[in-house]
Image 1 (cartoon, rainbow, N blue to C red):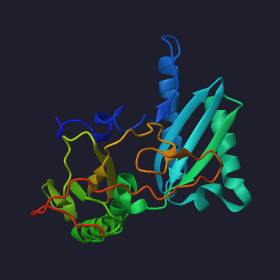
Image 2 (image 1 turned 45 degrees about the horizontal axis):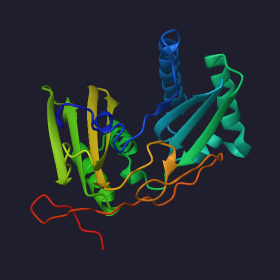
Image 3 (image 1 turned 180 degrees about the vertical axis):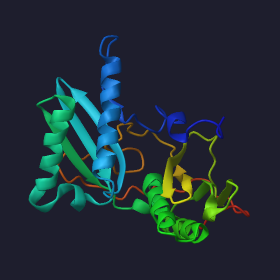
Image 4 (image 1 turned 180 degrees about the horizontal axis):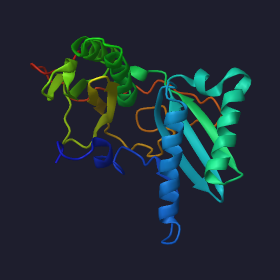
Amino acid sequence: MGQKANPIGNRLGIIRGWESNWYGNKKDYATKLIEDQKIRTYLNARINKGGIARIVIERTLGKLIITIHTSKPGIIIGKGGGEVDRIKEELKKLTGKDDVQINILEIRRPELDATIVGETIARQIENRINYKRAIKMAIASTLRMGAEGIKIKVGGRIGGAEIARSEEIKQGRVPLHTFRMDIDYASVFALTVYGKIGIKVWICKGEVLGKRELNPNFVGGKEGGERADHPRGDRRDDRRDGGDRRGGAGAGPRRK
């Protein structure tokens, strides 16, 4: 099961929260769901170089709150906040709502975010950098930031080969069947002249033993945190304990 299901969906309600927080009845559920997809598609295309990790959408009493988690908040905010104001007006036209609020939270350690790691590898492959070099650099930087393990899988016409294949590189431990393990997952692709190269990234950040706040906008301590509602956000150091780290051939570097 751990190999077949999405690790994020597998942990929803246990140690992960939903990225869409709202209630929909039988009449408007489908409409809201399609609108969420349009918002995410638009923002990812509109800010394709903004280092967006995830987009959290909340709806309360006719108010639409969109929280963008990014490693490059300056690109989204723009000079004097002009860019984020333009994005807000465009979202009002897209959704037809007058009350739209945009919050931007900075990711202080992008090396521990699977989406950003995957996008970095994809951009390097598109720039004709050797895929093995790009993957090894990403693995080294992720483990240096304190991850317990990382697994990266690439597939397609790797290196321009005639026959498509897939390769996987793993370092440390990534126990997909253990639900209390905080595993981040992302699937991205690189557009090359010889076709698409698919990239999957799994990052194990450690074990969660206590009760955790499931709202994805909460950041901070080992068992929860505090909410950052102001425009810039406060991404505090959320390094968790390593848990049970037995030695062995697949064990990752031990934090001091």
